[in-house]
Length: 512
Image 1: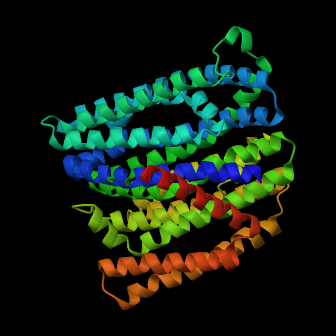
Image 2: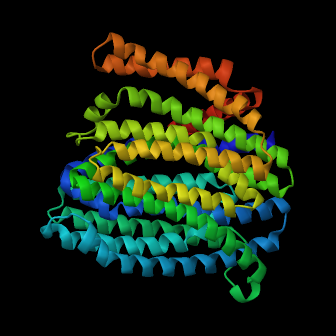
Image 3: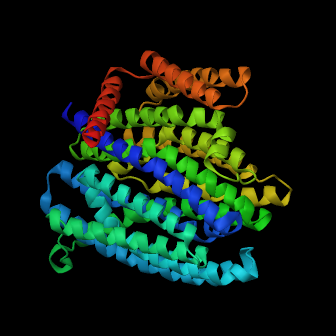
């Protein structure tokens, strides 16, 4: 019960942060698209878009380090935490150097042979690439500090940092709107500088607050921990690097076949999906440490229950926000953007559907990682990710439309889900029958019923503010009724109610 309250409290804090940041983020994107234009926005996405993918890479690598720190906290071994931090710091410093060398080596071939960018914008694109490399180094080197913050479940700091980041991004967007300079160059420079500033702030905070953050490799270095963490981080990095290469390769592939205008549509799809996914990833930030600590306490049953609940709640949260947005996507994009890029609507719809589907197994990698036996599962996931690019390339060569890349992504997510279910059963002892009856069946019932209700106003009314309001209202009411009666068990209902109450308390404090 105490852990459930802590998860609810941390989730409530993060949801308040989201209430502040989501609108600001979307408005900042609108300003940037208007200021840069579709072509320069597409260039930034294809060249500097890897910055966004490196955020995902950073998250995956943070999870690897956090696994060891959370596990040590579950065991109650404080000295081990110091060793884990120092080994993690050394490991990620070496990884950062290796990645920078690789990026510099790849850069020449990328610009000379692959990317289709106008000659008069090539120098600016190359500069943005260098900004990306600088940001990459600091992003990877700061992973141990992110892991410490997450292992301590300090979601208040996470919320403050996110609010700071979004406020500064909005400031940058307003500045380039009025700046009389090369807006694309300045935007890339300021975005890279922002990431470095935020990372340095996290490092200073951790040094002051957390006792285990003491850099002394001579005293706290452990060869056995280094070997274990290198193996774990290596396999985790294999999968996260495969996904990063695939997603960035998808951007390059679209650029090669269809040009930067379609890249602008892709950027909009990623932005929309990222904001909606924040609702589920916010909850998982609070829940993942509990999964790992439960295994550290040698409580496998508790770990599996938390993992199963996380899959279902994450799926429901994505569906709650995603389905009405999918239904009213044309109207929403026209309200949000001055000029909606071609393909943006279909890209957004397909990518949101893909993201909703992926939540059904989203906590299983954490559960498998808590046990530590990740080699085989990570190998399979890496192969599944990397297959997307050659398959999509062949299809585009045969004349496939741009939307096909997202159709392929949906099939890839289905393959990943089957792989995760198999390894969760084999490694963690998860009951496949219980998973399908408690998660899949209930998720299907709730989402199908909710989708049918959300589409009713579309069949009866023309596109308008009133129809948008009715879609949001009816789908929300259908979701609440269906999830409470068919979707959630007793403990999950308590957790959801506690999360809502904590979020409301935080909002009232802000208003006061």
